[in-house]
Image (cartoon, rainbow, N blue to C red):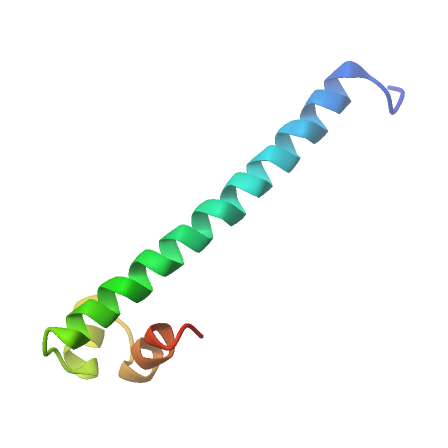
Amino acid sequence: MPADDPKHKAAREAVRNAQATFERDAEAVREARRKAFADAKAAGLSLREIAREAGLHHSRVAAVIQGK
């Protein structure tokens, strides 16, 4: 099929749109997790307690809170 085939054009556009949506949503989810962890820390939970609840290592929780 030629490169300008309408099916190819639609498929390429769908891939670009899906990738853009994924990148936008992934950032929002990362920020929601960072905020939840920071809020839990501000509420008095230790990094180890947050880590236990999230199934992560406490150093990873600290990195998430710092935005890394």
